[in-house]
Length: 100
Image (cartoon, rainbow, N blue to C red; front, side):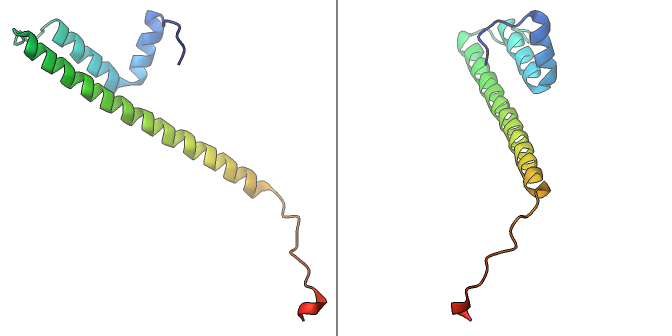
């Protein structure tokens, strides 16, 4: 991954491509802003934040694994297509007269 910072537009584009991450980030922002008004203690806010980060991590890993499966499948299909399109050059091995 590049260490360069993404512009706001690029970040939004990436988030729109991954709606599960976008939803988790929105939830994290709600925790930070105490949108529900139910996080009066730091311990409660910390627990909620940890829970949301764990969920986001799990969903991110699932998305990553799905992409890896797609990439691997595409590579295998490409490799199989190359092998299937080649012509067989050998008619086999000649038998030796000593084996008859």
